[in-house]
Amino acid sequence: MMEIRRLNGGDAEGYRVLRHEALLKNPEAFSSSYEDEMNYEAADYSKRLDSQFTYTFGAFDENQLVGVVSLVPEGKVKLKHRANIFAMYVTSSQRGRGLGRELVKTAIQQAADIKNVEQIHLTVTSSNERAKKLYTSLGFDTYGVEKNALRIDGTYYNEDLMVLFL
Image 1 (tube, rainbow, N blue to C red):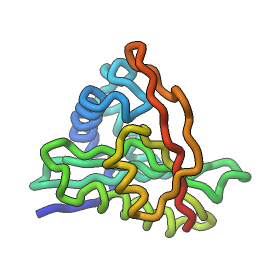
Image 2 (tube, helix red, strand yellow):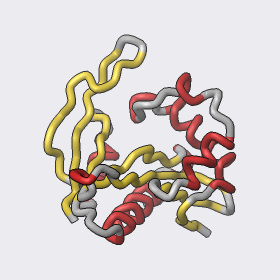
Image 3 (cartoon, rainbow, N blue to C red):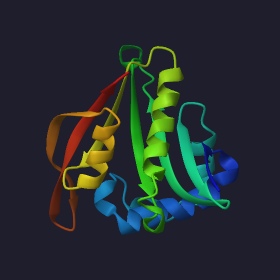
């Protein structure tokens, strides 16, 4: 039975394991690196998950965390009409089951429920056709490309900049 819900500090160890897996298996998909976070303990993630300013949702299969996405509304007065999606990841064995779609739909619904949020921004590695297709199918449009956004071991990766107007 699949369940999607907002994570909290009690989910920190499962989140840490999945986050480290994501950073190791798909380094081009995240601005953080495994080297940046390899020494983070569950307690470090617990603070993030308990923050009232960040919404991190998890997909669970039999109590096992198998997918995550974070929604972070902007805090500055001039940017309060915006929120950002970060850290989207579904473990490889669970892909193709619609979990990513359900996670992003949950984040979109959360954004719609936040007063004043009118648009959601995200970045996606330009070569990640599967993720771009998912975001486009949910209404996101590409409005630009950041050339050489990431550099990993001397290889550069472009990122598509996408937005969804609510």
